[in-house]
Length: 120
Length: 141
Length: 178
Image 1 (tube, rainbow over the protein chains, first blue to last red):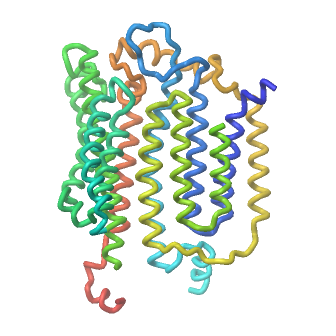
Image 2: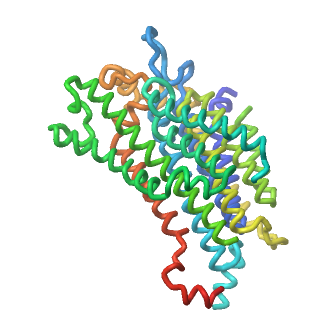
Image 3: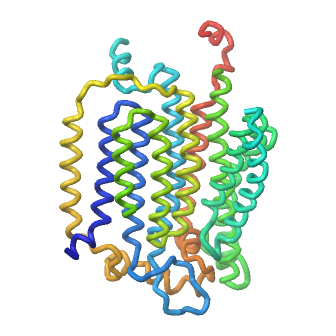
């Protein structure tokens, strides 16, 4: 039972990851695909942050006067902090590509795009 | 959007506060939660809110596109410049200990400058992205 | 509990067909994620996630939607079987992999033993900044952050290039097309 509780957060992360993965491979709408990719990305963030948590720890900001406080691991926080901002920048790039695809093909549906490619 | 009086008034009150909060997050990032990435995003969010409510043309009056473009490049330049400066002062690349007489003070100065560079680039990148997405719409209509 | 709420939102995203609703749910999802980050002691990350996910990202998605149109092409051919099989197989494999993982909050996990103790113990003396996330971000891992800033810069430039109106160059072609 203890095993199950200790691994619970990883399982949720995997379920979220698979939900995002399912949206990416099953949906044919490019904007929905990007939303799925965001869900996938966020699940990876949660995985990293949950690894950095220490039982009984506090946020890694030094408090004056308490020398023996336990701090959570700051390293995953740094990695994910930058990854979130880079993630939104790359999402914007993907959305810009979708806008260009819409202007070139008149649709954002993947199947319609491949159909019109085959006609050429 | 011309007659949304409540929205416009509330935005006028909120936008300066959001900007002030962004600067607080930027320069207090050494002591509490915060830093360049968050401050840049919050600052650009305040300008995007202005653009959403008063229109893209008004936003371009507030902050000119060429200013944003210069900011976008200068943030990375500040970051790299701090690295080169520490190189010239006899340390390694991005080794802030040599920037001041005391290594800890040097670290403080280096972190402050670097967070400033990060903040400027992130804010400018987000505003640029918004400019081009919103500008695309107005040219189409 | 909050994690289970995230799963509910994710499944709602799968089943909804209205793109505006999906984008709103994605914003909500980011906000709940930010709360989870606070619970997991990552205040800096929660801050960023709340500002980025619920703010900028939602605005950008809605801007894209206003450019591409809200309507999705109905009805879609049912071809969901193969994706479901692939997803379940991958998920089961990953869950099998978690049995060797250290438990949540375990202080003896390998992650906590490698470089983290050095950051936590030495950074107040070496860097002198109370917020360890800032000191690791800007000082110990300065190269890493320089790379990230360069990526954001490049993404900004790339969006500029992609969405610039390049027809200005040839007005004749513009007349023919319009």
